[in-house]
Structures are given as C-alpha cells and as structure tokens.
Image 1 (spheres, helix red, strand yellow):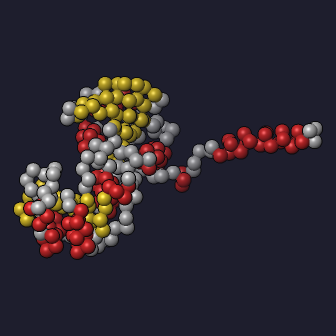
Image 2: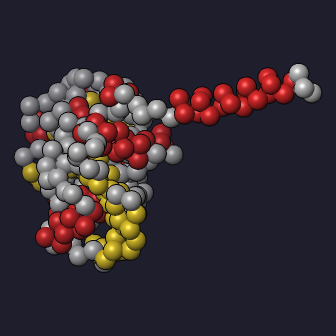
Image 3: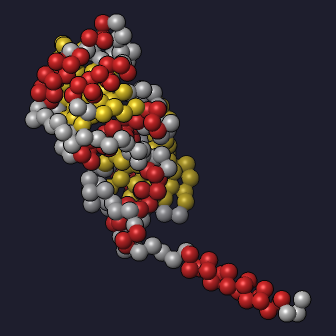
Length: 269
C-alpha cells in the first residue's frame, strides 16, 4: 500500500487542476454571436429598469422573485397570466456576443426569448408566441424563437410581390377571395377550403401567404409558428416566401408545384 499511495495522491491532486482547466471562460470565437436583428438599444442597468419599461409600454408586472442579475414577474395579457423571466448582463463586464451566447443556450433548449441591448426575457407559457410578440412591442425588442431544426430550404423561386406569389398558388391549388392583410401578407381560399375548412379561420380562407426580407427573417418566422402549441400550421416555403395551410395534402401539393419544401410541427416533436 505504501508504494501505491504516492501514485494515488498524485492522481487525486491532478483532478482539481484538470477540472479548473475545463471551466475556463470560452474565448470570443467560441461564443454564439448575438443575432444581427437584435437592436443594440435600449440598454438597462438592472432588471427593475426592464420592469419600468414594461410599465411604460402598457404592461403592468408584479414581481414574483429576485435572483442574481434578474427577476421574475407576472403580467396579464389578453386575460391570461404570463410570467416573464428577466435577465440583465452588465455591459461593462459582458460583451454583446456573451449576451448572445446566453440567449442561444435558452433558444437551443426550446425557449422563445425577447431581447434587446444587454438584456433578454423568457416569456412563459412558451407555447404561446403571441405573448412574446406583445412583450417585445412593449419594450422595443425583438422575438427570437427556439432554434428548431429546419429542412434545407431552396433559395428559389423568389417573388417580387405577395400578389405574384398568390398568382402562382392560384395555378396550383387555387387562391380565391384574396384579402390583403399588409404589403407583404395575403389570405385566400384554396379548393380544399370548401370541403376541409380551416377551424381557426371564420371566413373560409385557409392559406396565409407572406414575403420575408431575408432568409434569416423567414426562418425565424417559421420557427415562431412551430413554437405555437395551439395551431398545427403546415408550411410551404422557399426563397423569400412562406404559405401556411390548414390542410396537409394541400400544403404538400402546393410545395411540390411551387418548388418549395414543407415544414410541420412533427419534425420538432
């Protein structure tokens, strides 16, 4: 035993050195960068400052608990109880990419995050993205959906207008009774709407067409739809566009004939 002891002690002494080495702070090139669409301002010193911003935006929060660098609060949105987990990183000690890396860890584990400047909010329940959208508008931030895996999305075809996209859809599965929602959004009825109406739509329109400014914006939009536990969207997409369908077969047919791919909730369950 006397001969074994020195070797054993040497091994034990080596353990803390190895462990300390394993927990070195990551270098800047190992961090997940902050998404470029996250605004650099407003910046806040404390989580209470974020709470004050929520109040200015018309959302009255009640603080539930405090923690290092943040707090949790409760708000009421559309009659529902919503919890906001606020985290603020000191810009003197944390770079923008360090904030981005913290956000990425939440998104990678299936969470939607509202972010701007040097802070972010996890909004619960996570399966209702509408709450995150309203929180983001109140505090001049953006919504970052979970980093769900998406299929390889073709770069083409691209459309100059949402009306051109609607014309292409009309040649495939019909796009009747068009209703313009905005410059880049149109609702319409496919032939499936007559026999398989969309349960959520009260007017018989079962396709939602939308153009996007970039591939990143398109992907974030798709991921936000996938995070919604309440609506099983079936999405056809390619280039700079997405079309949401209520009917699975219609979505498949349109994606095939328009040169896109299909995305649905099942791929991320």
